[in-house]
Image (cartoon, rainbow, N blue to C red; front, side, top):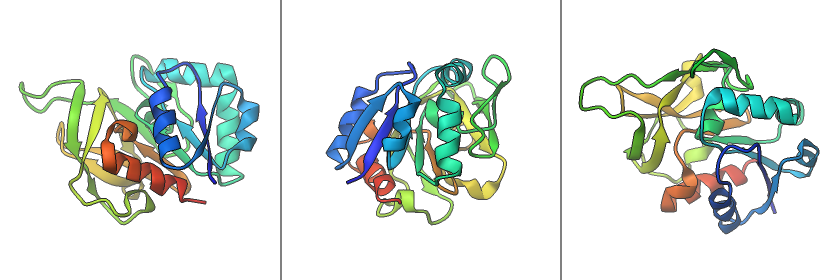
Length: 206
């Protein structure tokens, strides 16, 4: 059985994420202690809020070094959700320039409205379209709706790291993949059947 470690760094309610992973068959550990990372077969970085606040909390709590070590040296699969996806980037530009985890080359920038009808933040259901085959969206039809709440977007340095795009403010990368590190801008735990399929696909990685 997969053991999913959900990182508790004080940025958001983790219980809906926990319930979703448990329903998908994982043993779940929510922890604020980086030493617990060695118990994990899969690492989950959720979160809502500002990039700078999230990184400050990860640095101060000692999670940055632990996540980088386990993902880069040990090859443990990592999934960033919403703010967690953005924190995988090299830099964020929310309020001030802030260094990210650097696990997926790219930056985080504000969504720019394309018309007066475009609302920021982007809240609600929207489609995702795969840009290439990848294990995270196995068995999920192209154009499936997922649930989003965000004002910033991940801009990958390498086009091939964007594995799904969503039409809003032009378009943005709604999912990224770099080696064993994955990020989704949407909330799989709030996205019903296919959100749970994303979680199951992630847990199947080893």
